[in-house]
Amino acid sequence: MARSLARKLGEVTVYDTDPAKVQLLSSQGLSAASGLTEVGRRSDVAFLSLPDSQTVEEVVLGRGNLADSMAAGGIVIDTSTTEPAVSIRLAQALQARGLHFLDAPVSGGEKAAIDGTLAFMVGGETAVLEKCRPILQCMGSSVVHLGEAGAGEVAKMVNQMIVGATFAIVAESFALGTKAGLDPAVLFEAIRHGWAGSKVLEVAVPAMLKRDFRPGGTVDIHCKDLQYALSLAGSVDVPTPVTAISREIFKAARADGSGRLAQPAIVTLWEQLLGVAVTEKR
Image 1 (tube, rainbow, N blue to C red):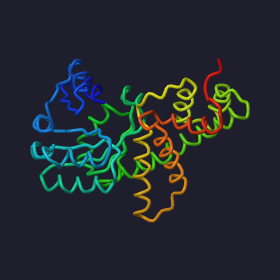
Image 2 (image 1 turned 90 degrees about the horizontal axis):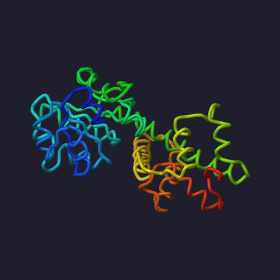
Image 3 (image 1 turned 180 degrees about the vertical axis):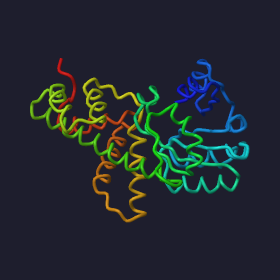
């Protein structure tokens, strides 16, 4: 995402607690910052891409935070998957400081991030979004305004519910097909162009077949996202049994040691139970 911004806008300042990430981008011509204070001083618009709600709050408002160093009128855009209630609190806190906030979580996975074709789901003030729309379009092919602060994150909860349930049923169904004697690669070709076809299917099955569970997204992160969705559902008294089951599957995979792997790694749960391997035939 930072590379996409730099290609189209010129200078972009980057910071991460992992020095290797900063060094990598710095070696490619992006400007490295030493910390959040420097990012804030140098930025009219600051993007966040962080693992959880607690980290987002700490970066924006905690000790040595971003907000204290930004000039009045500055804009913070959170592309993380964050609890909607946290986004609302941050928008209110930043407004009191003369700053603006957009929650703009993304979907599309690592490939879309590399290609600059992410889908942005945005909550916040219309005028602020329209000012930032050209910047978001440097990284995404879809920018949709859902409503006030927190609305983008509600949309992301819905997205993650659908994606999580799909990863789970792909793993379960391909384990069944393999156990019943089908070649999973041939099964994939048979169903991918019918109603079962989806972007998740196109990512999950090749990863299972090739045993390529290198993370873009991870089991850990998706488990966290599904918990956020369940918390949101609880706050508005909506029953979500499919999401609850999906989270238990991701939670089991995490407990089994697959937490840092990509989501398709949940197939190993069924492989261990059934004594099969959902892989390419040799």
